Amino acid sequence: MASDNVISAPQMVLGRGRAASKATPGEFLMSVERIKLRARLRPVTQAKVDDLKVALQEAPLAHPVTIRPYGDDYELVVGAHRLTAFLQMGRPVIPVIIRDLTDLEARQLEIDENLI
Image (cartoon, rainbow, N blue to C red; front, side):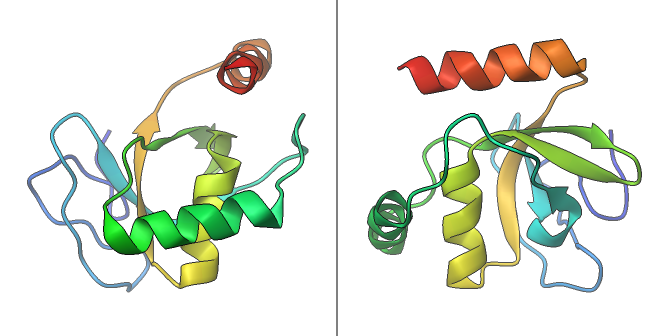
């Protein structure tokens, strides 16, 4: 599922003129500008985002966000706090897993991740 804005590691990815980065095997890097947010079951809390921002200054993101195709872009399925932290930190790309999901499957995955 390669395009101008998302490709598999160890190749480079460019997101609409943004800086290039590398992903780890099995993941992709996506321009944060290509990921759209929809209504979330659990609201994003700034305190959790702030904690993530501190952690991301010390170590790379441990778990990529999950997205699905959405028109010409992508929709966030899970990882709203992680994406928000990247956006607030001004990071142009984020590690992602791209899954082809129905609306029901996407909602079930969001519920599953937030039950933990």
